[in-house]
Image 1: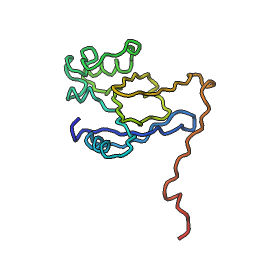
Image 2: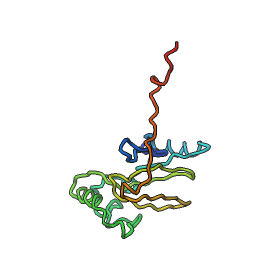
Image 3: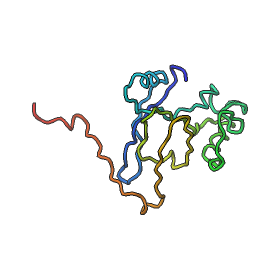
Image 4: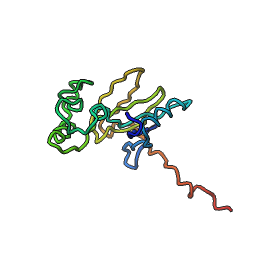
Length: 171
């Protein structure tokens, strides 16, 4: 990524909402250069790069580029989608729209983190499935059954009060 291109750094997940669904983790927008500098200087880096559209970066344009670009699923030379995940209807629709000149984005992201980075309990975007490939290191996964009655009982994480509310009234 170029210095001026946007990246997002995330940390541990945001906990659960009132209905018991996983919340989005807190993110900070920054350039790729800022994130790399933070990674190099932080003595205990745990933030990870999230939602980086690597294929768009490599292509250098939007998803509506020619069919020979790496952004095109059929001609992508960067990776191949494992067969159990090849029926991704959402991205198939978005990529087909892009070929017709309607760039609606995509849901193909890179998440990149140093040792010790992690996400909390969460659901993948739009409750779709995702697949993961570790270039180095290991990743521990915990899966829960889809049936609500078989899921572990988790309480929502208490939300921090705004600073103005947490200050005492004494002057």
